[in-house]
Length: 340
Image (cartoon, rainbow, N blue to C red; front, side):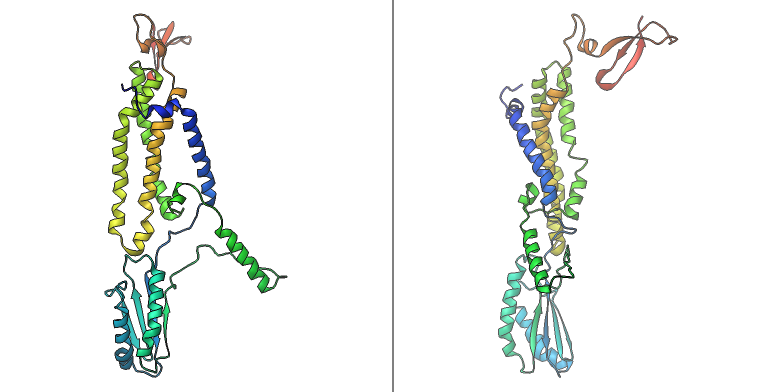
């Protein structure tokens, strides 16, 4: 067994390891209360509507004089998806449903450029065109609506109070790893936590099983804990990486809003499984040594099983065979047999 191993450090300096885990535990509880929460994940609405008002014009006039020039101008922007942008012409009105490309993340900047450009473009349209209006935030919804009501305060006072309340809500601090990575608690991240719920204990089970195996071979508890972590660390690491990698193709196959909604799903799974692996090789060995003691030394000419797992007890009166019984309970399994 290797004497020098980084896995030995957490066990030898367990006070520091436990302090770090305690801090993370407290931060996790605190973070559950203050981290951003929403019912659904944030998704970028890459769609907007451009409306040109041309009173008195027929459908054909709107199509020839407004719709086609407006389409050609909008298509000069590389961020506009030509295949998914549609135009509707009717009497006195032209409606263009503009769809941006899926790789556009700074939609506000793109729509700002389009709005400024259309202000200049309007001068090239017929004089009868009254307005060219752009609406790019019709897809936004409120996740939480707070109403303020009072029968004694004026509307201005209520507005001032609402503004102060809004500022306070925005200043609530958020902590923990998921917040530092920009991940909020919503229906998608909760689903990821449910997916890994049964996986996060697997690494600890493997390490404990190896610890019991090395104890049975006669190793000291500390050496058994370190050797178990050392032997199974790489297999557990590879298995964890494989499980995490399964979920990342979502980000390659999904586009647009679906990609935005599922973006945090594989990241949440990776964070939880990696933390599970880290705890299994740092904290679990310490708990093994403290809670699972080594069996006593075997008697001369005997075995460890005879010394640690055997106990002679009186058989109840009337029991078959009578006399004394010998009980064996290797690792939780027990049976009784009569002593000769």
